[in-house]
Length: 162
Image 1 (tube, one colour):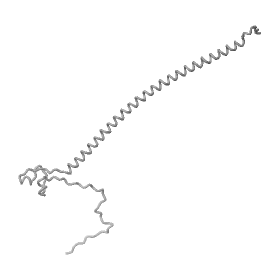
Image 2 (cartoon, rainbow, N blue to C red; image 1 turned 45 degrees about the vertical axis):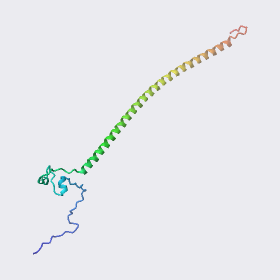
Image 3 (tube, rainbow, N blue to C red; image 1 turned 135 degrees about the horizontal axis):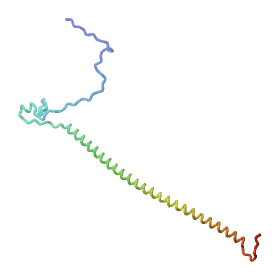
Image 4 (cartoon, helix red, strand yellow; image 1 turned 90 degrees about the vertical axis):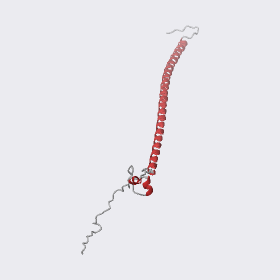
């Protein structure tokens, strides 16, 4: 009996069996066995009433998956935390908007007071200019009066104007 020898290729030419691909996450097996089958360590199909429980004539009760409940509890806790953070953020946003509205109202009041002060300043400047003009006119009249007094100074003699 002659066995045919399989021809071996050099290592460089040998087809690669392992592909470099990203690692796929391992799929966890679902625990579907009922309480009774788990206790007896027998195979269970996980249907509403499994074969083992059916043969024994007992009620088939699904086994509570603690890990699933723990994960659910963790997810619910994270959800509650996220909702609390959202509510806090909404409250802070509401407070910030109220502060912004108050600041805008104060700014409008300050701008109105500034406009009033500018109007009063403008009026005061106009009154000052009027007063300065009256003082200038009064000084001019006083100088004119002094000149006239010097010209017509009573000396007891009549001056002749030639």
